[in-house]
Image (tube, rainbow, N blue to C red; front, side, top):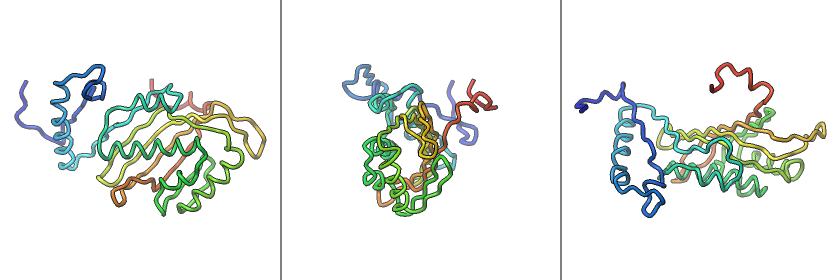
Length: 222
């Protein structure tokens, strides 16, 4: 069926399997015809963006069950430009955490960054966010690690993006009770802004996932 007129307000564009395995030259399942049509979805995305339609583009999806950094890297969908840069910044947070390198972590933040940790502490300014993380990574978090289980990027404007994700935490001991915490998961939300051509995190909010409460989620999947 041929459609001659498209109403942007009533139209959704779905792109399926535009991944490196199919698109990249020399890939295992390379399909030249798919690569040839790649510019068309990009044109459609630009058209919809110019019509003031908010596009929710899940450009990075790491499925549940990925339990190492290397696994996360192998499951990313093909992205380009800003989306790839956003993805790299977000994954660099995980890498700096696992190395306990708070200098590298702070370099991913804007000067006016703010951070809310899982127990509601609110740190304002890049220096304070770094200082708080440094203190914890020199004490009860000094041997822990975290790994991405799911990650979604939504670019709102050319200079603003939101990232939502789920992380699995390694074992750590609570400083107040001495209790060992195992198999913990966090939900994270980042707001990123593009400054002088580089994407940086301006807001971070981490929430512990209460596994006991999860069964009572009224809108849980399934």
